[in-house]
Structures are given as C-alpha cells and as structure tokens.
Figure 1 (cartoon, rainbow, N blue to C red):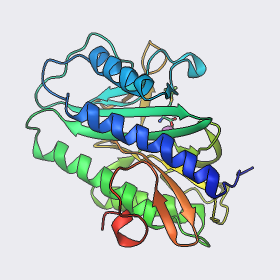
Figure 2 (cartoon, protein in one colour):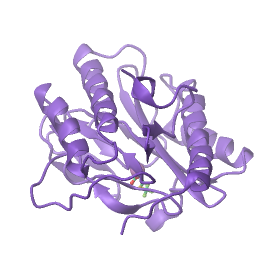
Figure 3 (tube, rainbow, N blue to C red):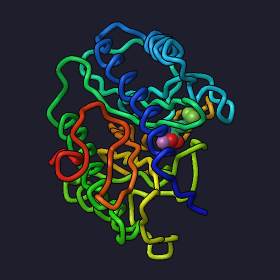
Length: 261
Ligand code: MF3
Ligand code: CO
C-alpha cells in the first residue's frame, strides 16, 4: 500500500532531506586522496547528530555505519573502514537521516582528483538518468514511465541498470511501497502516480554487466565483471505542480529548474 503524504508530512520530509543534502555537501569537501572511509563516516555521523538528526542506516537490518560508501566496482552498501581513497577512484556516498519521525535518503557519486573520461561519462549518465526519471514523476503517469526513462537513457549510453536493487517509497519509514525499479518489467506492479507520493529514486548504473554479487561481509554489492558502477539518489515528492526534489539545497523547485534541465 502506498502511503500518501500531506503538506505537513512533506514539510517534515523536506527538513530531513535537507539535512541529508547538507551532509553530502560537507562530505564532498573532504573527498581527497588519503582520507579513509571510516573518517568520512565519522564526519557524517557528527554532522547529523550535531543537527539533532539520527543516522538512519545505522542499525537498519544490522547495518553497522552511518554511510554506505561504495568505491569503483562496488555498487552499493559498501561498509566504511580503513580503506583510503585514491586519486582516480569514483566513490558513491549514500546517506539516510531520521529527523522528527521522517526519513531523508540521497546519494551522490564523486571522483577523487582527476578520473578517466569513461568514469566521468558513467557518473554523468547516471545522474542524468535520475533527473530524467524525476521528470516523469508526474500525476497521471505510471511508475513504469519513471523506470523506462532511466533505463532508456542508461542503455543508449551503452551502460546497464542494476536489477537487484531498486528505489522505494519513503516517509515515516525508510522503505515503503512501492518498489521503484530502474528497468521495465511488463509484469511489475505499475500504479498511476498521485499527488502526495514520496519516492527515493536511485539508479545504480554499471559500466559492463548489470550483474552483481555480495561480498563475504554480507553487505557490499560489487559488479560481477569488476567494472565500475555509479549511484545517484534523490527523494522527491509528487505534487499537482510536478515533482519537487526534497533532497537538494538550492531554492528553485518545481518546473524545469527542479529537474536540472
Ligand atoms: N539508500 C539505500 C536504500 O535506500 C541504503 C540503505 S541500506 C542500509 O536502500 F542498510 F544501509 F541501510
Ligand atoms: Co534509498
């Protein structure tokens, strides 16, 4: 069942998601060769707690950290630790925050120093696919319109969309219905989109095969062919005026400005 949010719910979801966006901005300034993923995790946790939020992933199904940090061939759910970032790495940072009973969730992928042009293109196409999906998140469209927009852009660029992880509804729970695949399956549940739905859209895009496997730690998903993967995520609200991106800092919302076009 998809839980619809009212204006007050959306205001509170926006606050949680602004904190997510601010934490990501804070982390961005620390992305340099030599910093360890555990240090980034500590910076994020301190930022969130200082602002009276709670890290949402920590303890979720036993997940041990504030951030998921996934480097290069790691797709999602990389656990922070002693590993240091190196020049040329691409690093995805995924954060969830609980604030006043509402969840925020977003992710970015960033390069460490200069990265090669194919890695750059992978990141760009992944972020573009997120914004193209967001543009389709309008009243009256179906969920599959979002999925198809993401998949079409990714595959036209010669990349692949991960099948084993999907986006999700979000609200007073980190994960709510519906699941939001970044690919089209004719048989999938395919509701019409309505005002008051709030979604975390999160394309995970691989350079090579879409197939992934989970490492021995029980969390880290990596590409089966060891090629690169990128991940971008925004939490959005569907309104009668179109989608609003809740997890970003800039003021302009609604219309073309909100979708980065
Ligand atoms: N952003 C991911 C999601 O929405 C990460 C959460 S998984 C966790 O599903 F276990 F790390 F919390
Ligand atoms: Co998510």
